[in-house]
Length: 114
Length: 113
Image: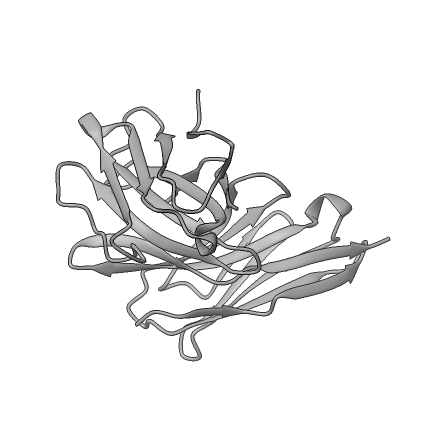
């Protein structure tokens, strides 16, 4: 079956522009996560959606970052007024709750802010 | 808060064993994981261990957990060139009923022919 997909795979944008990154989780997975992987850094948790519960936004680094998950499926991560320090690989993962322990990761979107 | 630490680099000769170490801080972790990231790819779950276990073996992989010292290790026997990747340790933490993973910085494993 299809895994987690993300689009675009690469995005180059100018400083100050807004960008939207998309994640299509595995069908039926109720939990969805966004992470950021900066060069030489580990994975930084950004936001977590679980079913119809309020999302855990505790990892979002600033109010320029927001995310939505529509219909419990597709998610969009939006970065407004991008800065050079936003350059990173943004990874999405989904998980089948409640009993599954594994997060399935997408290939990521590489964002470069010039 | 949670913190997971790993050394950044490890070089091993082909055929030798690789041991990748990780320390974590949250004693309430329920699961601990090892993920593998190959160049240009997403993360792939390699193995996991429940916090009430101290060892798990899966083919060439052996996971050891020292809960007292909050130390986790991954041993890869007979390391091959295909094992070249970044290996991430992660702990699962429950926070107000939500479960999320906290990852280490990753250890880049390089295989020397």
